[in-house]
View 1: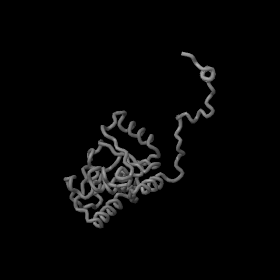
View 2: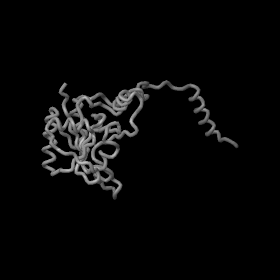
View 3: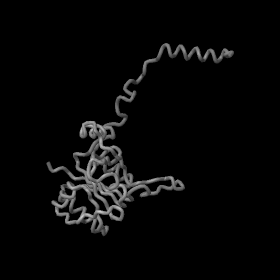
View 4: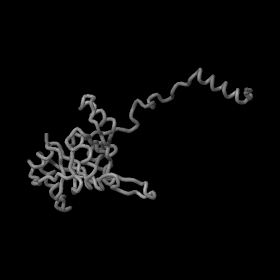
Length: 213
């Protein structure tokens, strides 16, 4: 096959360039460092801002007594009577702080589900959930409303920090299912219109509790 002079000239330049590579002008831009700057504001404030931008509902609680009181007030306002919470530690913590509710067991027709989480990612407003607790894979998905109870010690800045925390917590043996949930379920596949609550809860609350110790 005959190669035209112009093509041969281009190939010659390519071979010369490959034999004498140009040093990378910005070596720190090769993926070794995060492209995102460290948080300026308090991570709780940053999480609240990002979470509410995506139609999540954020509630700050001064302590566990305040958590119980605000949950009771919300349940009364919404007329929730079928409240699912499958985590024994969370049930005990709520009931110790005057949350006099008999928890409902049927997820299929409940009003709301309450779970804990692994961490909260402040940069993206994301909840990191897993099957390591007793909630399983479905509790945060099938209920029409999901309430996530978290503590300020669970705040991390970026997704990589959340993954690193999981690796350290479980010594490399990660839970079988990890979910990164950012706000209510949504899709724009229906005639290019944003629809909320198609594949999961229509409303998502995060109750963030200030650490007491």
